[in-house]
Length: 498
Image 1 (cartoon, rainbow, N blue to C red):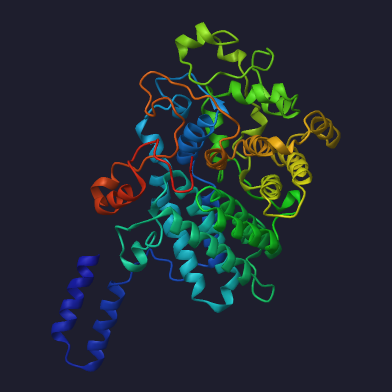
Image 2: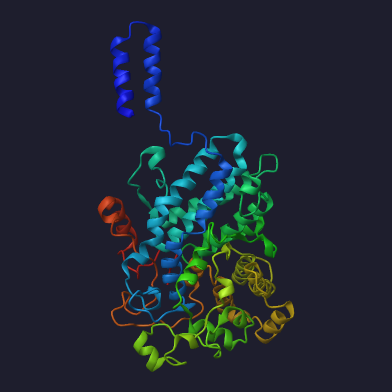
């Protein structure tokens, strides 16, 4: 059909003898140059729904990096499988595609869409709330990637279709953090009740702008604290600004995505449905047992009916038989309660529990006048109550009070206690659990040293850039390595200081 149209247009051009016939040919040429597959005016609300769902993570990236590396590296999960190596972070094995997964998925889908949304919404003065929400979503998206890899494309990212920038430069993580914090501040100030709200097309808060403002400042608190070792003065300033702006104050302020079986399914839930070998780590189960934690009965399920028993990290099928505390049958080890990891289970971005624990840390540092113990207790209560969003019965208030009475906050060990509770509160939010552990290194974990591991028997500090970057974007990725350090699992990102 295209050939026929071109022939017609050529004929029109050469036989045109009047202005009218020439105009007709020009119209045909214009029609030929139009892409019939392009949506000329994509509604912002529809695009917002799409980027929010994508920010929850694809099954590919959450299965491989979220569970495969992050949850097992911080010893929430464990695995003995070697042939398929479902959890390379269990033994620090360089199962090559797993470390690339978030990087590969992000630039193909998420980055270009969120950048396009922010750019388009900025052009419409009436879309000020869409733009503010888009800025917050941009931070949610980019900070998970930079926390995993360090220096990444940022200022030129997602610009291929906008500015023909196909080989973006890598920004330094310090500069990325400065920009993300500024984006959050700008977004919080932009949000206004006098402009249109996205309503139900906002699948996080249903257009509740008050909650979006709380989310913006809560993320500012998270990112501010992330810099506590790398840039303490800036960290303190941003933490104070976030608290003054107004962070989350109640359980249902949390930012989450609801999933639907057969629709947009939970990437973590799907992973547990299809992979039956993952077990709760002995480190995690042992910590709950030691403290008589009421979450143990909620999180742990042993298929054989045996007592709760975590699987030690670093075992393989042979050493499971010789060294496994419950013997060589995986059915005797704790799995994650199947009710929590279904295809319709929610995805968490940031919870009220995390915010309260961060406020406890800020108070402990002297950056906030609140009472560290009060916020710690609120954080623990919220972390346990948060499991109700998964459709299960969470520990009761009385049970949590009993737990706190038996394990009271101790200011002398406050940072460790907060770190441990944050680790527990971010179970099934693996990228955040992994990021915060690298910053504070609580709980204290004992690394494994499995034969042939890729880290020299230390817990990985970052994920590796994909090999394809060294072919298609070599100049820029090599500049990042020159700034940050070798492309290895043991190179620390900017905020990850010893």
